Length: 65
Image 1 (tube, rainbow, N blue to C red):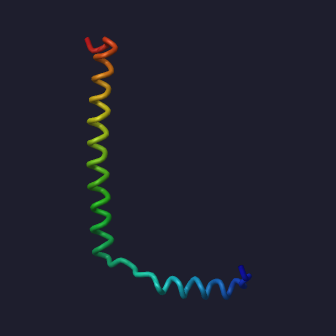
Image 2: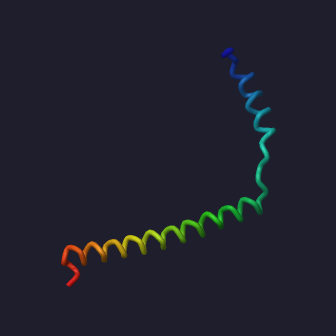
């Protein structure tokens, strides 16, 4: 791999950054909202799974009385 000086490196970085397709503000907002919705669903799912398993283990071990 050829060595480049810092100025050339920064020029290459700027050139590559210009090729990136950046999301619009609307796309960013919609994606952020979807992340929060999925986090909420995941939280509820794992809470329910934890409570169910906890209840089952307590019944099996006889601690459910």
